[in-house]
Length: 117
Image 1 (cartoon, helix red, strand yellow):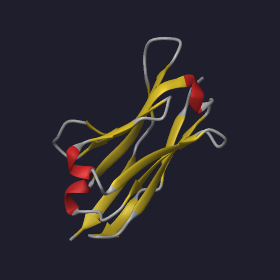
Image 2: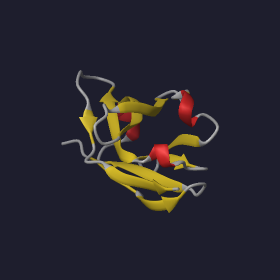
Image 3: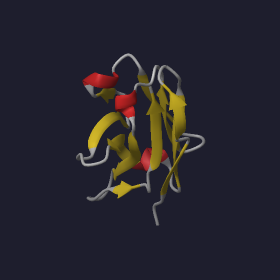
């Protein structure tokens, strides 16, 4: 059974950095895309960044130049490096993965990121 476990969230001040990790119970190569999403209170869950199996990445405009998504095929993790954090980045961050060979998707349980001004 596939499990995704996020870690690395916390409380930081504006301008500081955090590094989120999404650890997979199966090989990262078994997913065609892995993405980080976030959901602030009262808002919908939105895509923040994604990385495709071949390596291309994409980011929502508000985090371009500040966040970096990467994957480690040895450790089977997808990391989101978040720099120059802003209060508007405050949300629960989720990892989502779509498998290569079958439909559907998997979600992690989420990790809270809080940025104080």
